[in-house]
Amino acid sequence: MSYLCPLCHSPLAAQEKSFVCPQGHQFDKAKEGYVNLLPVQHKHSRDPGDSTEMMQARRAFLDAGHYQPLRDAICQVLTCFAPEKLLDIGCGEGYYTAGFAGALTGLTGDIWGLDVSKVAIRYAAKRYSQVQFCVASSHRLPFGDSSLGAVVRIFAPCKAEELARVVKPGGVVITATPGPRHLMQLKALIYQEVLLHSQEVESLPGFVEEQTQHISWPMTLKGEEAAALLQMTPFAWRARPEVREALKAEAAFACETDFVVRVWRREG
Ligand SMILES: C[S@@+](CC[C@H](N)C(=O)[O-])C[C@H]1O[C@@H](n2cnc3c(N)ncnc32)[C@H](O)[C@@H]1O
Ligand SMILES: [Zn+2]
Image 1 (cartoon, rainbow, N blue to C red):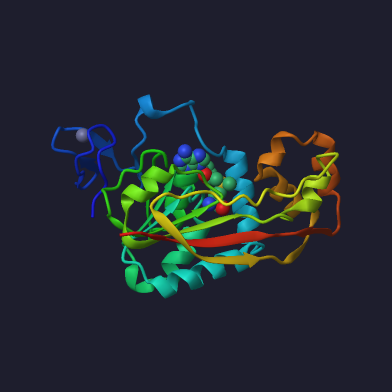
Image 2 (image 1 turned 180 degrees about the vertical axis):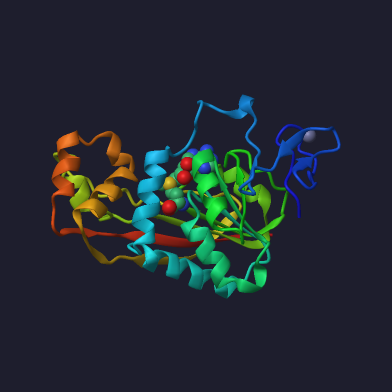
């Protein structure tokens, strides 16, 4: 399977140092091994997606193993489906994608990670050579119709029409979204009134919801880890600098996690 050209949608042929389509559109491979398939005219900002600070905070937090139960749960679901081709949408710095590659060892080479953040993909590709990474938008996936057996989407946006287009009949989409009590104690530091996460289930036309799993566990974080958690969430924009400093000074910050993992089966 090859990528599609983001400009004319023809298949891209892999050459030694680049990918080229029959129309001559060329995309160079970066020295870390990834390819940037986000043409300038498809960008909505200069550096879309997560920033370097968010990405580094996420890497430090994930490396410490605080979200490993979520990764393990998705790996377990994936091993049941044993997809031939897997895409992790909004893969960030690659922690989960590499976990999936480890769980599906027979599949190495057929696992893709995609994110709109160039810095996240650079870090991902540098560390995890067993996965093929690209910079692209989830609103225009550079993959052919019905070309993927499974797509994972952890806290990342994607157009439902694109999922229905790229996942083959009988294939699956696995989503991880926040449960009602996710990171309540962190939110309490920022918002006067803490609202539970909405539990409205998204609609994915063309898919049938097949499994729903609720996963939650308590975390006790050192000050630096709690500050990294804040930094990697959208709440970081709202937090006053004093909140971050106070978190850093915490000896043990107790915080709940709450995730919902859903499996959606492509109809047809
Ligand atoms: C909350 S992070 C989750 C990252 C990773 N899945 C994780 O859980 O650690 C959301 C990710 O989606 C990416 N993202 C945001 N908009 C995107 C888009 N339109 N296309 C692809 N990726 C996008 C961000 O750059 C970021 O890496
Ligand atoms: Zn082209």
